[in-house]
Length: 133
Image 1 (cartoon, helix red, strand yellow):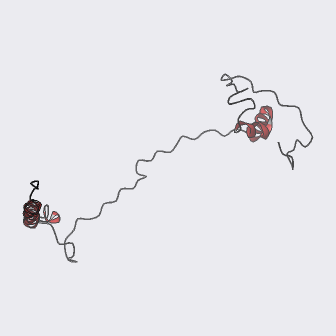
Image 2 (image 1 turned 30 degrees about the horizontal axis):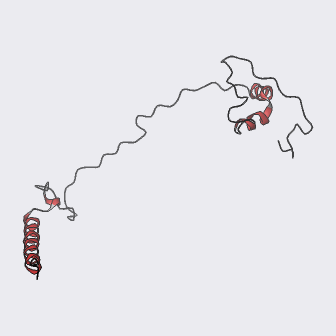
Image 3 (image 1 turned 180 degrees about the horizontal axis):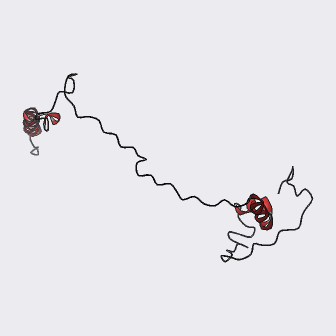
């Protein structure tokens, strides 16, 4: 018959070592001062209603606020005319959709100061009431 290792003896040794390690860990944890008492030398008891405490200081989050400079507002008539020259509300509505023929097809950036595109010819229902683009 082959020689089999003595499993119960190994198990007893492992159990004894684990028990000793657990006991040492518990002893170390019990002898250490509590975490809240580490910096509490001379601190007041938070449950004492008569304890002296430093006064509260409040600093507003808006203390360093700097408002934006005032900008001149243009004429609403000029703004409406600029929208009409650009093609009206339909031109702005097309900006959010992909161009037909793939991404970016027919899309170009105008140079700064360039004149806006010509307005498209008026179509029936140009007022936009009840008409879908």
